[in-house]
Image (cartoon, rainbow, N blue to C red; front, side, top):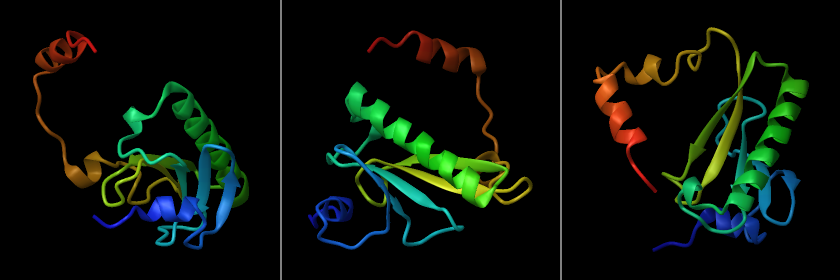
Length: 133
């Protein structure tokens, strides 16, 4: 398996445009941006799924994302700063932040892109509420 591109960026083996960095998180510009200000918040420890981060790592990652989102809002003045949590194409957990305007293609995401699924709300609630971790 090819080594993780985000791990290489964290180690400085690949170039990036750093926005913020601390002991456990790196914030960089996305190299395939959808808009000016499109950023990635990457935990430095390789973790595929964000829900596998420790509670401390989760707090630092999300607080860093909040800080960067506030910077995006101040600099680019979007109506919204959208957030997605990924780990799919690049198999390393990361938060994606990008500015969005009222009425753009993201305004109704995910329903506007994926459609609406009919569910039995009582059944789904019972499954989730009744699941112990």
